[in-house]
Image 1 (tube, rainbow, N blue to C red):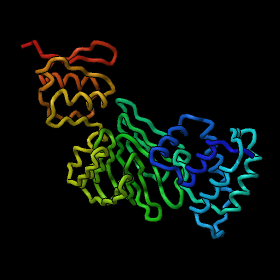
Image 2: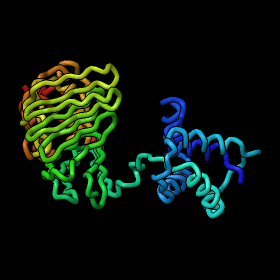
Image 3: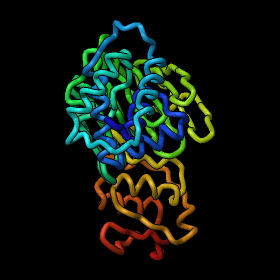
Image 4: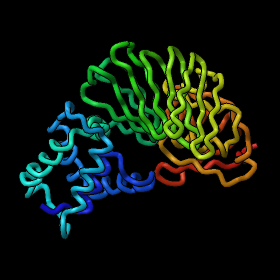
Length: 328
């Protein structure tokens, strides 16, 4: 049976033998875009799981090379559609796998996260996880988690900003996976923010260990400590932080701490899910130092007009202008 180049890539991906990080990244992108390729990958993954022969003495790296060699000797490769020829593929692949031993690989993360929570602009969503842990997802953020946690661990994935109150269970460590970071805990309260270049993990109580994906460095945090990591520069900073300020958003508080009105536009727009605009430079550079607690949009506008001495007008659906107050 002939096996295509795409099939070879699937086997190489499972064996960890793709040549460079760029090759692996491109293959993962192709998995997202190419339904046929993703189907092949899932089928190969299934075969790896269905033919365990851990007792065979052959080492993993030898097995991978021999499988690739066996595939490369096939003449005139052509595409095999698994939906129509899966039975033939199982027969051949089973022979190869049983002959050369089993290759261990990491389970595809996407397949285990059956629940996907997305908080849009102006939204904050509270979620109870299967173990009873409470999670709050901030605006423009998302959370993925399984229907049921495994006996060995509790894994979730997030992007954006999420606050966690994790139920303690020493037999089931809790792991937060995100782009470039992994946070491991037993039971604790902490905030993870991956928005922008600097990604932060802020610990309110308990104890966490943060693993940096690029370097493998493991850094432990204690209460009121925060880790900030800039993925572009590689800079890592560990510092104390103000819990009430960092986690104010989860209590429906918009905190604008000593910043210009221009700088405040992003958090304001995200918090209320609308667009405020400033065209006047004097207004843009006015300093704001305020906390808006449980205020709806109308209340917020009235309060902001008062404390900043500005005039706010609606110019379109969900769009407002902030201008100087001419009523002197």
